[in-house]
Image (cartoon, rainbow, N blue to C red; front, side, top):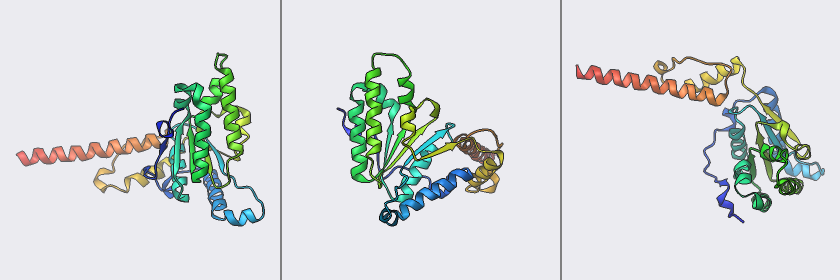
Length: 243
C-alpha cells in the first residue's frame, strides 16, 4: 500500500483565489452560498436532525474553475484541503486503489477537511471496458460508495469531472449538489477581463479580448498581453537610453 503522501497534495499552503474573486454563474453562486450557510449554522441544523449537504459534484467544461472553486471553498471554511487525482491513482496501482481510497476518506474524516477528487470520471470510463480488471473496478466503485455513505457531516467531499455522463449512476446519486461549470458569456468574460486588468497600470491594459473561451484561457491571454507590453516598453526605454 502506498503512503498517503505519495498520491495526494495536502497542504494548508495551497495557493488559493479568494472565493469572492471566483467567477460563477448566478445559479452556482446561489447554490454555493446556501452550502456555506449550512456549514455556518451546522450546530443549529444538527439540533433538528437536518442533514448537511457536504457532497458536491463539479462537472462541465475544462478550465472553468472547478479546482479553483474547491480550494476557495476550503479556504472560506478554514478547512485543510486534500487533493487527489483519481485518474493518476487508478492507472498507477489498480490493485491497491481501494485501500488507498479508504485511507484517504479516513484521513479526511479525522481532520474534518475537504477531500477534492479530480478526474472522477476515471471510474466510469474504466468500468465501461471489458478487461481483466473489471472485477477490481467494481470493488473500487463499491469502496467509494461505502466511503461516501459513511462520510461525517463536518467533512466535505468535492468531486470534479469533465465527463459526468460516463460516471456510474450509483455514484452520482450520492452527491446532493451538482454544479455545472460552463463557458462564460461574453458579458461575463468582459467583467473578468476588467477585473484582471485593473491590477495593472493603464498603459498596459490594451489587449485583444477573445471570447467563447474559458476563464483560465482568458487569464492566460491577459497575462501574455500584459507581459508583452511591459517587455516592449522596457526594450524601447533601453534603446532610447543608448541613443
